[in-house]
Image (cartoon, rainbow, N blue to C red):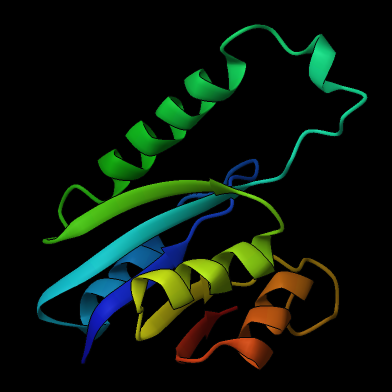
Length: 133
């Protein structure tokens, strides 16, 4: 049983976090902290001037609201949105917050076993990683 579980969430068409949340709940010790984390890629410098005012704040608020709704039945659940490279940002969060388990879905659709982010996190994480295929 784990006491501080991180569940990275990648927003892609048709993606829902139900499997990841169910596994995190099953792995959580009583009173555990479960955090859903979304990593936003940085907008390229040449495109930022074309983004409407307030777009980032609105997007972050919408993502947090969605993750909160998806994790509403998880005791001790929290949500976070950070910006950066997905793999590095996930491990930075683990280091900063002391997670002892990462529940991570692989979003690879070709014949590879796991996607690049899942593979990178599994190789470099300082804690347990539960990969979902």
